[in-house]
Amino acid sequence: MSLVWKREMQGYFYTPVMYIFLIVYLGLSSVFFVIGNIAARSSDMLSLLSSMSYLWMLLTPVLTMRLLSAGDAGGDQLLYNSALPIAGIVLGKYLAAVTVLLAAILLSGLYPLIIALTGTLYWQETLAGYLGFFLLGSAFLAVDLLVASLTKTPAIALVAGFGVNLFIWLSDLLWKAVSVPVLSSVGEAVSLYRRLSPFMSGRIGLSDLIFDLSFIALMLFLCVRSLELRRWRVGL
Image (cartoon, rainbow, N blue to C red):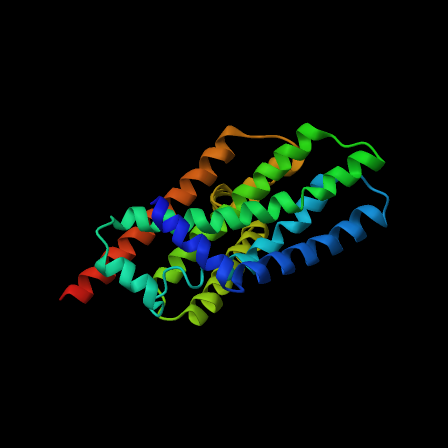
């Protein structure tokens, strides 16, 4: 798994993917910070993180589009010819994407530092918000990695990943509008954005934490099964 992680990290450094991701993320998040905090003279980091959470829907497919798509020759060679278990390959690739995502979050840690130097920052609530922010991004990465494993080219993986992420966001809005209490409750229970809300209120809910980690594990499990099916078809 560590070898796969190193290989993918090298791929990020030697291709423009990581740099595009970081530049766009930092550029857009800086706009949110300037408008929502600097111009408004607000020290509310949780509102900033809540607004920034929608960036994951747009940007995580960029990190996963080339990791497992069938059109990635290097990925196919690793998948079909390596003695490594598929689960180890998937986990190594996923952790590489999570590493880049975490690097982006750490770079945006400049924002709370600015607030702390110029005003009052509530560290505990801010850290809880950052944890939820990180878990949401990690969940979208797991979804998009699964999408990439089902596609033929990185370009299709990018478009399909964005489409699935958009569907997740729209379904969250749909569940809120449903007037049937049972359906609304079920929808809210499985909503990634609904699970984010406690974190953005400065609270770490154990049930929300377990849900996010279970969701990520399920997506990676399905990704492994998808690749096993692909390897079996090639072996026929």
